[in-house]
Image (cartoon, rainbow, N blue to C red):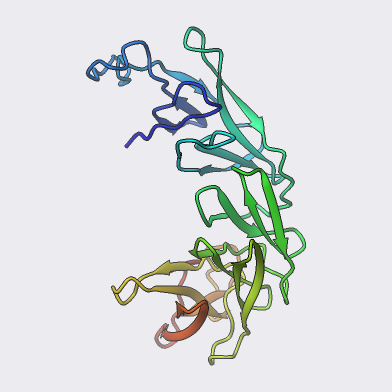
Amino acid sequence: MARPIRPGGAAPLAAAALLGGAILLAPPGPRAGAAPAEGREGVPRTHRLLTTSPPNRTKWLLAVPPKKGDSPPAAGLIALNSDGEFYHLRLQGGSSSPRIVWEQYPVASSLMVHVPPVRVSRGRFAGAGRDGVLYIVDVLKRDWEFVRPSVPLSALSRPASLAGDAVAAVARDGSILLFRRRRGHWVQTQRIPPGEDGDGGAMPDALPVVADLAGDGGKHLIVPASPSGRYAHGVLGDALEPTELRAYAYAGGRLRFKAAYRAGGEGVFEALGP
């Protein structure tokens, strides 16, 4: 489903797709009020097709939902390269000769990019930094801040967004850390160390997810945990695999252990995330 975006205050872009490393964008043409009619290339005749390639060394493409009245205007599609630099799309040239350019955000994030950062709110992303800190980058406000946790974060794990003001992340030692936004600043508010609930700690490359397990609108953090080398297949890069999935309920600004699902016998979960 195409969703309009408005980069740089120019004509809105109506569609974006990845095809062989190129991004295809279709700004509305002069017949925007006419009924859509498919052209020979599958593009509605009400639109004009433009192409562009992502910036050099692009690692991830991130979506920012549009909102009317953004200042500066939201780009809709953000590129993050291997150096932790952000770029956004901008349409230039007007309706007669439009062209697409990538402009770099003046944001020095120092993000590790082994895994993509998680979107916390509409334009805010969070991820582990090069020094094991938590970085929160706001691409709309073109600002960032970091939190130095009690134990360094794992650069191989992706944080999970519990709410617009709460993020959970995995530390290098297998701890689960909770960060919250209080009075306009992010702080660490909780640490669940390995072994506290009888487990062997979270996987250092875990990709935790947030789900409503009870169907009541509540949130649960689900984390692969208790690594073991008893299954030496190594399909994911090493011979360590989780032997259980642990669920933590998030309520009242805290994480509480809820349940664990363990692999039977000598089994493991050959995965990074549930």
